[in-house]
Image 1 (tube, chains in turn red, yellow):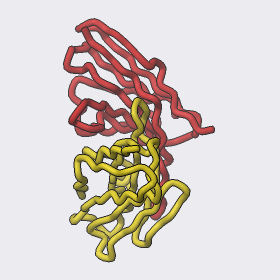
Image 2 (image 1 turned 90 degrees about the vertical axis):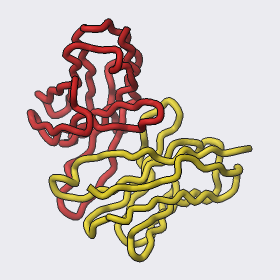
Image 3 (image 1 turned 45 degrees about the vertical axis):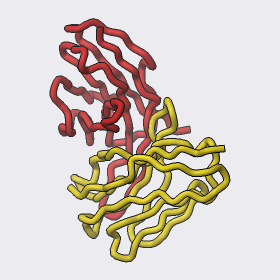
Length: 116
Length: 112
């Protein structure tokens, strides 16, 4: 069974803390994604990685950074957590899309982060 | 980037067919049309995708307009388990095609 695993389902952190959200996939996928989901705003892409050490900013990268040191692991980092980063965070992975091929993305179960 | 437009919400009765529309008037010739759905308290899951021809799988059917400016996801017999948010996404290929961005989606409510 294919799997995208996020390290925590629920997380509570204090304002100003450095927060790491971890995502691991076992499908040897090149592409990995981090999203946040808020009521009324849908799924918004934070960062995208298309290979080890390679990344691109999504729609809302401010306040976040990412790390992809190994193919299977993609980390989202909140350098100094703030209350407006309280949200559901979702990780996804997908094969690289060469010309003429489109494959599905697989999502983790999400991490609900509360910053107090 | 080509955008999609979907109704915010739709209602259906159990056991009846559901047609979920998606407009994508700025679609390019290389954009695939993908549908995902998100059940309550879960991450999104893939439903179906197509390029030009209509597509069927065990979950749903995808009807694509001849000009490709709109598409419809068809659930043939809605069940209570189909209550979810359905997302219509355009995917290109090549470098830009590797990004995956979602719009607001359609919240489908299924009444018993």
